Image 1 (tube, helix red, strand yellow):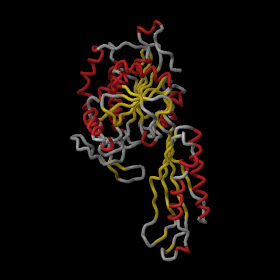
Image 2 (cartoon, one colour; image 1 turned 45 degrees about the vertical axis):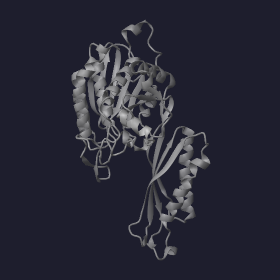
Image 3 (cartoon, one colour; image 1 turned 90 degrees about the vertical axis):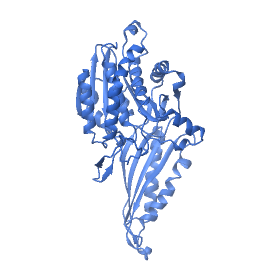
Image 4 (cartoon, one colour; image 1 turned 135 degrees about the horizontal axis):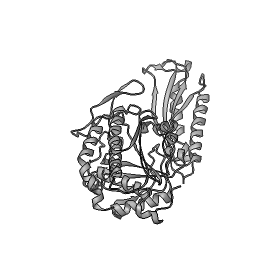
Amino acid sequence: MTDAEWADLDKLSVQLTDIYRDLHEHPELSLQEHRTAQRVAAFLRPLGFDVTEHVGGTGVVGVLRRGDGPVVMLRADMDALPVQEKTGLPYASTARARDADGHDVPVMHACGHDMHVTCLLGAAALLAAPARPWSGTLLAVFQPAEELARGAQDMVDDGLFQRFPTPDIVLGQHVGPLPAGTLAYGTGPIMAAMDTANVILHGRGGHASRPESTIDPVLMAAHIVTRLQGIIPREIPAAESAVLTVGRLQAGTKDNIIPDRAELGINVRSYTPATRTAIRSAIERVIHSEAEASAAPKPPEIDWTCAAPPTVNAPDATLSTVAALTAHFGEHNVVEQPPITASEDVGVFGQACEAPTVFWFFGGLAPEAFAGALQQGRPESLPTNHSPHFAPVIEPTLSTGVQALVVAAQTWLSQPEQDQGTHPAEPR
């Protein structure tokens, strides 16, 4: 792509910066992304996209058809987190909202989804420009509720691939704690599957001075938490990577009362179906066994509430896409990285339509701050996703994310010069 083809990005930069700051200042929780969706739809329609709102809840789908050719899907997530922002930015969020349980909570784009939305809007604008030649169909998908690992499935269940063209390839990206201007990629499993369980343990309450007359669910929970930590090191092969965390343990109201129930929140990350199944089975076995050993008055309740598949990059499609990104950004700005234990639900789309997925990461930290932290041996001082201090620097993060989506999309959309047989192998 020539410099002239990127001139429109310079013209767009002020508008995109304003959009990003507005989205950052007005974040919305999962399943509540109404204002964001309206902004997205209003931006896409004048570009010539056929726009459909309320797909899978608050999701937005934009379709731009330009003759015969592959269907290329670009995806961005829209939701924010219940986090109190502490960045000190002039456009920092002060928003509050009611969460699904009715609690009043602060809201912040602590994972960078506002940047994802803005980058996809910028890419949509550039790809819609008449001067940019390609043929095929562009499917721009703005997904709700990624933080609940359900938005992608909600859109699929709402007929995403029946109501709209079925993609030949699914492309997406995520901003993270890398130097702005750089990209990172992997092949095969690049992000872990996630499973979350809510557990209720039943006991028999009573006075703390007479524990013999009770069945203590706190002690039961303590034994379970300890036993759970032995599952991965003792039951999962050392060559397999997995993480098990008990992030929540709640019981009781007063120190001299033994309660009649305790609750646990368990989170698991894994990469293969066999490991995932083994860990879930072991968790249930441990919980039921400890409850029985404690003479619980009734069985524990285990509710697997949230799940996302691993994000798996199709090797051939990824290497073709990365080759184009490397040619554009330079070898020193595109690096390979090992799998990470964070999770995404973007993989749901590729699984549902049986198309390859290519997902990469782009940096959002000021390069000088990143380099300084490494030189001081303090990489942990850098803010990461979900931190109240995480907010990408606007540039060069924004322009990098826009260009990456455009380059990746044009790798797969038919090009005039590629009609002679030089188009990459079909992703399917």
